[in-house]
Amino acid sequence: MNDRPVYVTRPYLPPLEELLPHLREIWEGRVLTNGGPFHQRLEQALAEYLNVKYISLFNNATIALLTSLQAMRVTGDVITTPYSFVATAHSLLWNNLNPVFVDIDRETLNIDPSRIDKAVTKETSAILPVHCYGNPCDVVRIQEIADFYNLRVIYDAAHAFGVAGPGGSILQYGDLSVLSFHATKVFNTFEGGAIVSQSEKMKKHIDHLRNFGFVDEVTVVAAGINGKMSEFNAALGCVQIRHIDAAIRRRRDIEERYRTELRAVKGIRLLNPSDNYSGNHSYFPILINDDYQISRDALYERLRSNGIMARRYFFPLISNIPMYRGFPSADIANLPVANEISARVICLPIYPDLQSADQGRIIRIVAGD
Image: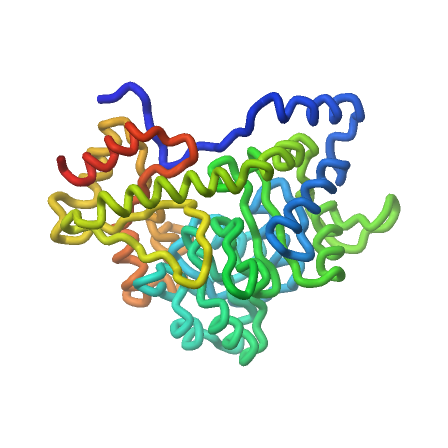
């Protein structure tokens, strides 16, 4: 076994000497939170980079998800995917909403719009899709369904930083989009997140909710939460954004090598990238078919025994976790594709400083050499 572990993803950290002057400025200015100068700089820089008009920074994406549902005054049932990280569905339970799971598309692994259409009832108020692995949902069809039934659309875009197509940023679709800046994401602020909104009025409302509902020192207009990003996190983000294009290019190179060297391995299915959108190469999932030499779980254990911390991402399926099994839509018969994919998927390491020798070792193990 190699002594150096290799993880599915590792935080990209900029040169420390670039960050230190910002930290000194924070130290000397004594502004640590509450929308300080680095908070303002990062919001502006992200709006420009992502080509969006309105963005509100948060301390993490889970709080941003909770707040987005509050901001849109969502009630009753919310149609969502079971193939995601648990925070997607947890945000619904925390808001006393009922998740209604529908199946995913076999090719994209995103929520299947045809299943959304069939799941709408008089209790449905919103759709919460996920741009899985950074691959865009069918945003046009989802919006058509939402418009027909007068539903809100909030995208969990935790994986979709920087993804854009002919019509611009994927974050421009829906009523709101929620980003994650967790340490393992393409763009990180150690911990952090953001909500992208479509109007100045909505941004102001979100900003109030983010800060306990305060408008000014004596005026509280909503039952808000403490979701503010600290100046330390924002300062890191201001440095990170200088390096993000290079980090994404490096991820692309790693993905291309995986594709070149694994495409001929019998029993492995590689997902097809979108033709219409520039990806951010945030994850590299492979699907293990029945004709592969060993089972998915056996491959998982083989990788880990060699110091490669691959992840079965997403397994278990949200709908199979105890607090969700009781929902009628969680029935396995209702989610055949999602259950199958969850039993076959494994994500291989991809991050900017993944060493070529380590990637070669991963490829040899997966190829069975």
